[in-house]
Each structure stands twice: as structure tokens, then as C-alpha cells.
Amino acid sequence: MQKIELWVITVSSDRSITETAARLKAEGLTICDLLEDIGCITGEADNATAQRLKHIDGVVDIAPDMPIDLGPPGSGQTW
Image (cartoon, rainbow, N blue to C red; front, side, top):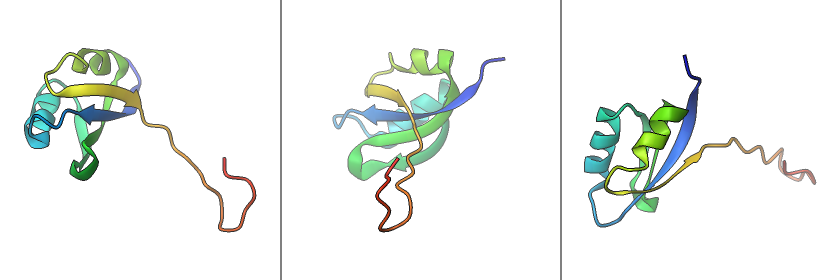
């Protein structure tokens, strides 16, 4: 069984983000969040599913979601 990972999907502005999200869900993506203002969808899927989702109309890019730790306020170290 493949490992489930978090993904950030950038979608085209010429299609409804909710329509694209529904298509992605139907193809195996577990939707986490619709970021309509910036044209992104976050979700969970294995790598094979993510590669397949790249070919859906309205998808511009799919990238792994990487956690970022900015550290406490005033800290010199940001990563």
C-alpha cells in the first residue's frame, strides 16, 4: 500500500474551483481545504493518484505540501 501524502493543487481560474474539486475527489483525492481566493486545493492522496490528477482539466500544478516552522516570535532561526 502506498503512503498517503498531503498535496497542494493549483487550479485554473477559467473553471470553477468547486467543479475541479469534485472531479479531483471523484478521482481519489481526499479534499482537505478549498483556498478559493488563491486558486488552490489541498488534499491527501498517494503518489500514483497525485500523478494521475495532473491530467484533469483545470489542474495547473500539483506539489507536495511541506510543513514550515517559523519558530517563536523574535527567533533568529526560521527553519
